[in-house]
Image (cartoon, rainbow, N blue to C red):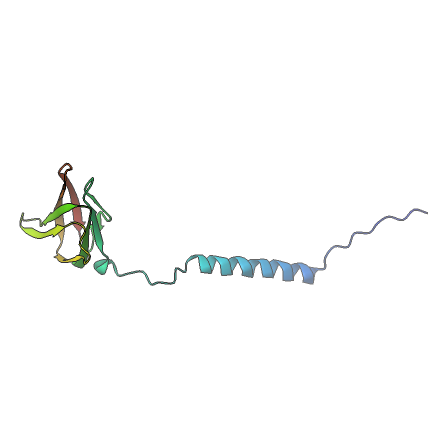
Length: 126
């Protein structure tokens, strides 16, 4: 008589424990993926960064309110409100950002990098 190897299948309880442990591990990893350790800043207080070369702004739109503005590069940036009044002229490379209070509308940003081409960008404020 020849013997046939018998393969044991895990019992239902063991299978349920393995499945539950795998699901718990995946849920924990998904929860940790959303944690960055720091709270998301309020949109009305997030900083704006203007890169003079290419006249790029880190946000295309922001809510109305007070914002800090940091100008990156050598030269200066000028912000004009929807009525055409200059509301900020800031030099690039400053340690401290400039403060700017924005109301609803579309603002024009003019970038004047040293030795570079004049550039323009728009910032929508809602």
